[in-house]
Length: 222
Image (cartoon, rainbow, N blue to C red):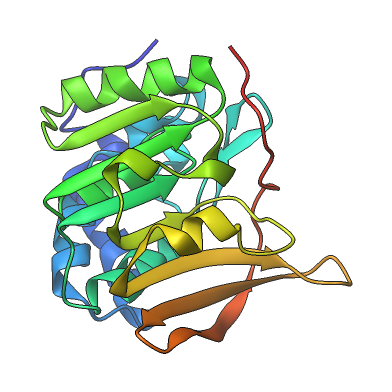
C-alpha cells in the first residue's frame, strides 16, 4: 500500500531529506537542478512502509520482485551526467522499477518515456506518479532491450539495470548529440557505469565509476 503522507514525519521529514542532500553534495554532486528535485521528492513513498525510516539513507533498498530502489548518490550521479549534456526534452528510462529515478527525471526534463518489464512494479509506480501529479511521464510495459522506437530519437537515455553490453537498439535510438548512462557488467562480474555520447562520427564511451545494479533481463512479466 502506498502512503499518501508526502510531507513525512520523523525519519521521513523534510529536515531528514535536506541532510541527505548535504551528503550528496559532500560526495561531489554539483548539479543544483538535480539536488533541488531530490530534496523535494518524498523517497519514502517509493518503498515499503516497513522500510520508510531508512528512506533517506544513502543506500539501495529492496522493493520486491528481486528489484531495488537505487542508492540516492547513484540516482543523482546518473541524472547529473545526463543534465550536463544541456538538452533534456525527450528522455528514455529503461527500468521504471518503483518510479523514483523516473520521478527525478521528470523534474529535470520535458518528457520522460519509461519502460518496465515487471507489470506489478509498473502498476505501483504509476500510482505514485499520479500521487505526485507528474504529467510528463509516459510508461510502457515492455522489454527494455528494445527501447521505444516510436518516440525516438532521445536526447538522453538512462538504463537502471546492467547488461553485458550496450543494447544496439538503444544506441540507434539515441539522438546525435545525446548521452546515455548505463551500467555494464564486465568479464569478472564487476559493473562499470558508462557514459556514452553520440556524434556524427559515432559513439564515444567513458567509464565513470564502479556500480552495482540488478542484471538487465529481456522479456516481460505480466
